[in-house]
Image (cartoon, rainbow, N blue to C red; front, side, top):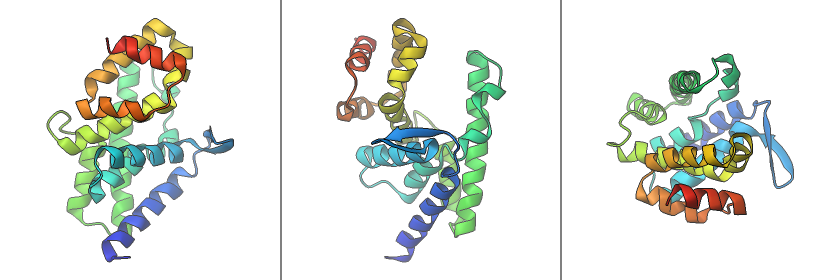
Length: 196
């Protein structure tokens, strides 16, 4: 293992260790696992699908963008869309700061740390290809992990509106990658309606 590979491995291990403390779990293949750890693994998967030659910064941003998300729960902010957007913005800011501190602790240089923070904060979305890849991966993780629960909570009509907004944020490559998701019958039908 080269020094760069070792540094990346140590950083991912540190991010995973922080996310392993998540008290919220999701079931994966019959086993309860920390939610944000699973989310980080799926983000890394989709970034490597979309960008097989992804840089360390892209991989670290994918792994750390939801770092310790549970420490600031959604219900600690006002209900409604404005409250949700404030919560998301505050989360991105906190996560960018914390992942930067963690990367500094394992020995990453300032330029890489700033690049990771830029991607996590989604600065340059629509102009920066790495940030767009990150956004596409986020959308793909949402579609594969949260579409059915969201549809159950919001109902079909509202979910189709959410899916239309999601699709508008995605690149053509990101949308094409949805073919790699095993949707439920209902999820596939809702996505198809949203993309009409």
